[in-house]
Image (cartoon, rainbow, N blue to C red):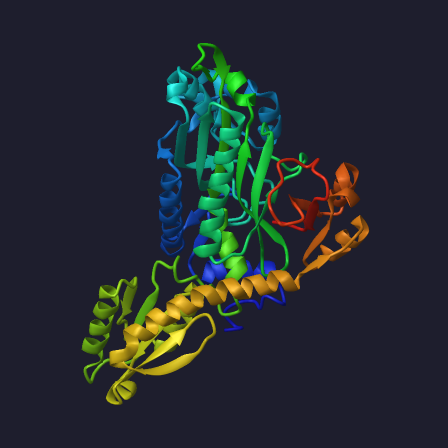
Length: 468
């Protein structure tokens, strides 16, 4: 396998690019910074979508769709927002062969256009909360693109909500943070994220608070996997999102926004991948069990088909590989690269002994198993390996995280992993100094590990790291 992928320890970025290409997950698009998501990669994204969509709907939000093109004037209504996104904007000035009366922006995010319609749809306190989500593409012109992690166009969900009170808005932003984002990342993606508060320097443009889920990648760097924002009344005042209160007065709403994207695919690769390729957690995997015919003949095809059907009947997402005109070794390498959690190999020799071979991707183990026991063995392996991948990632994060007391120590520790340091030892000036050396404050935590309301709370801990 070393001939297929560059070893992670030798060149982690090259390994990442090798894996994406060899596992046929994605390709570079024709315009710099864009990507083509291939079927193998898109199947994983579809599973992420389905799992996330279910959690968002369970939190009460409804899906809608808003335009790709946003009048430039909309962005200018919220000064901090347009300033934050200005360097990344793609602006259309001509359409239909003519110069447009007003330039339109290809959406980098949709707070402004959705705010316009929230103002139209909300009249009374009875219309609140308004809980919306959309699945869409967005464009942010990236200077240093990397497939899945930073591309000029990417896919995501973006939620936007309006509430009667600040307390309701904060509670909902945190509900999404924990019950949708953290739950998905930990229990489906198998990535043990740290959930915390972004500093003022790192928070979303126009927000009053940004909450984040941070995962550690295989090389010790951090990746922001999802964020949830309190927007205060900033956008409500800019777009006049107001309502008649129960007392008869006119009040501005409190709004939130939150999003996760195809960046989660990059995080999945870098958190769980090894030198043999991708390792997909079983709960996420589009194909959980891959039944492979080693060699045709002697009833092998029929036995393999029966195993496929039995696994499907047991609720396993299963596929059958009967391409015996392609060398088995090559097919096995492809299966390893794509990270199918379990392979069930059916060949004449094992079948003659009444067995099939169950191969687990997580630890590489191979176990001859009686055909009658294969379904139970696969179900047990899927459950065990979901937990094993999470536990392995958690052990990795703990081994690469150190507690220090000074900014200098934190910056030094960030060369190989994460540093936990008192926020009081960093502060605004220290954060700027760290940024100058390529290190960022990923988030702030309370002493008990919970998420603070603001960065002025006493005794907060900061996590510093290099990041993607």
